[in-house]
Length: 236
Image 1 (cartoon, helix red, strand yellow):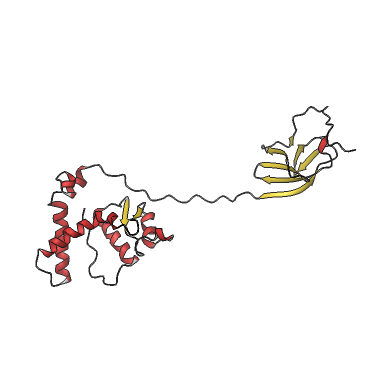
Image 2: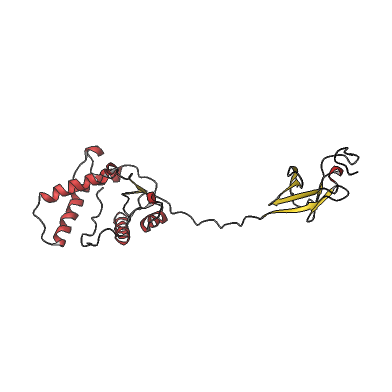
């Protein structure tokens, strides 16, 4: 449908304020927020392709609308809308030129009324835009984004040097990890990350053990029977 004409009294060029004002007047007129908003890459409209945001994009996104642009140097994308402008210009040229801004605005309002309510369109099965809008299914209304979830601070990752005790156990805070007698007095590096503890050989850097801390559990054995005695890496 042909939308409300941009305020023709504005002669300061394209600005973010004017763009947002035009969008707000369109939403108020049709009592609906568009799902998509197509524009060119003008700085007053959409600077996404330049790696920046714009006030209009932020405003539309807050309403749940998805702003999109045509590819630079590819004006055919905007031709979907500019075809209406061509019809509007031909209609104006067929009438006596308006001598005042107010008279021109009346002509533009008359064009919108006729284009949307009186003139059938082949592309719409010979319906007027107003009839097509009233009779055909509507897209689901856009939903404004919900509140951003609170950021949860990531638990710090810590690496600390430790030494396995003479009985083959390793104490990390209140947790005891059974390493085995083959690691007695061995220097290790303990990496804690959230609920995970990883033990590295302090000399080679290889992983020796990894455990997942369970609530209330203070001792983690190595799955070996108590009578197990390793013949490797035992102290002499």
